[in-house]
Image (tube, rainbow, N blue to C red):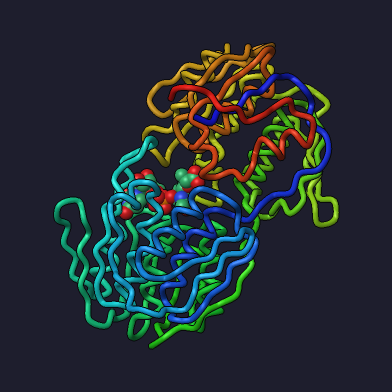
Length: 421
Ligand code: EPZ
């Protein structure tokens, strides 16, 4: 099984190109179901989750050619089979994003409940309540969501909490509903704004995507699109934390600085210099690494998807930092692995207290989820000796060739084939 071997501690220097955003490409791929024509996506990252989504679209009846950074979803030739099976959905929770488009366009859908994952229960109650408000009849039987609807009709929907997937599912459903919809207490992530741009390219009328209130005037049908996906702010933030940890100097091409404000502010407080240089962003650290407290929050707060990476950085800060995770109930699985590398971390409920240490020592560690894996790679870069990160299939879900990108800026890192799990 693939593993990644890292020998620390080398400062990173050179240039890294940030890939397209996974969490923008996934909903946009699902949005292709809203129209019958051929759609083309550009700047799509070469990730496992992209392959999984294209396999799901194929299963539904929409052939997809994945030649990243291009992906083409072919025109509908045979009627789509609006059924997303457990075998596919369990590989990637974001598969639930086909639910809104299928109900809106085909009037029915059978989609496996995504179930929980390592970081939390991940319910979809907000998705289902929103679809019911639009007129769908929803039942949950034998682990499947069964949805039936005539033509969806516009409605006013207030989310109990800002949910990224819930907002995306209901934007796509409302785009084909009859009449107007107002979605309130929406998630405001940049990937939501991006989905709004794509839906409008398809002929939808979406206003306010990326803010807490989104107005949608539903259409009878939508057109295919050709769209280049925005850059991945979490990948960029991960590299910024890696450079800050190693004390390097790296130019990040295509880093979406404006989408990273909360992360950049916290990294700067930690002593990392982050400056725009033309279309790129220069990241470097020469002085001491200062401890900084972080509490995750929905955008525009500090993203939960950067918590693990920031914690790895703080293991070497000169002092104590406090990290509080408010979005997911179990997103500290990187902690025991970092402790095995010599990090001094105590957790109490959803708060981690990190005492910076002078050195970490390389160890064999286990990746448990996507961002925890990135945290272990960063820790490996700043550990003496050798670190082996196992189960890197987690990493491959969200990072395109991360070991190649890091090796190109001086890290001693390579992918190896290890026996056993
Ligand atoms: C998206 O997941 C991202 N995934 C996640 O990124 C990210 O961590 C998360 O948003 C939060 O920013 C994709 O975009 C594919 P949510 P999503 O619905 O949509 C609760 C990564 O690392 N909730 O915003 O599933 C939920 O339990 C991944 O790239 C409900 O209670 O997240 C959580 O506590 C991991 N009921 C909170 O809301 C619902 O119906 C936020 O979840 C839906 C969500």
